[in-house]
Image (cartoon, rainbow, N blue to C red; front, side, top):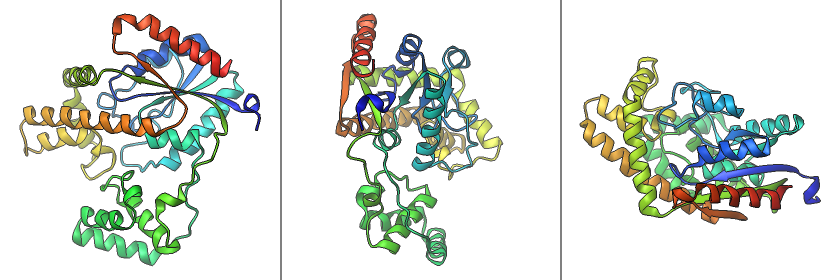
Length: 314
């Protein structure tokens, strides 16, 4: 398809705490964008501080989509994201605005940009029931180990606590003889006229910003937010509660570790997560990287991004 006949799609990626939110808001004002969250955790209601959602005021300034669309006990998968995001892109384009994906969940964003097709293998209810029983008797980690043996690549993208997805990946292999990861086929070219911009910065500075952000989250009431989730009946075995900030604080609230230890673990785990995000994004194609290490040059960074967008999309 001719590039100019494709739907335009602007994408901003980068590790956590690199400054995507502020940059996305400023870009949106110039290019009449509506933002679609590309974050796997921001879909959950009541999980605001720990997922670093845009504030109510920021969301009034620029329309946001795929935020607060599920309760924390409702499953949400990459294919669910893809379906919801495609629908939002169509609606935004119909209104004459530019759809703008902003986030840090690499698999979600890449699956949308390159139209991953997920397995249409059938189902085997007896097999599923057997795997559920195995998980109950031997534990979630033991079930996950079964997946690692047959599909290590697929296992990288599934949290061991997400038993439903682990079982589905095992089921696909059981039915087809092929790993689940081989069924998530990637289109050779994007169905969109894509402009993907990545924000990066000096690693030491990024880690410092991560630690500052976590200190700020604690001050803003992260502990109270997690308590409220628990009071509403959301438990630590739910995928949502395994998110950064939630699992560490739950462990503290259950008396297993001190608050100081919980904050230390949260900072460490977030640094590791940022490193994995960067590794994923660097495997993606056609990203125009902008180094935002020097915050004093914000205006120059914003202009550089404006120039990239005008070149790719206008």
